[in-house]
Length: 84
Image 1 (cartoon, helix red, strand yellow):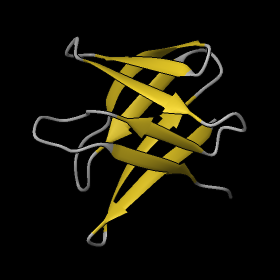
Image 2 (cartoon, one colour):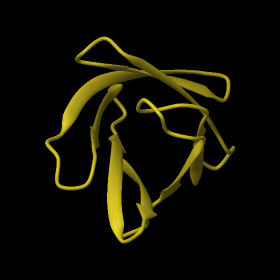
Image 3 (cartoon, helix red, strand yellow):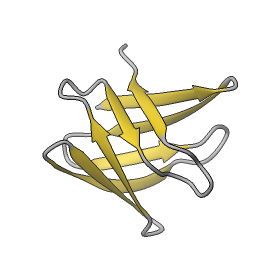
């Protein structure tokens, strides 16, 4: 599993991915939203349970992802990998 996070104003959102193409996303103090991901080249498409799709580009070693859009009204977002 790889976990990515963004910390904005002290609030942390998380995105977790598994090898079997499963993923989940959580906004601060929110419930997890589950979905699937598909990787082609360096673009990942996340399809969520409400049928919305996000697309992200990631660096070759998998330490960060850049989303052009995520939730409505959001600007481009960079999620960084959490190493534990």
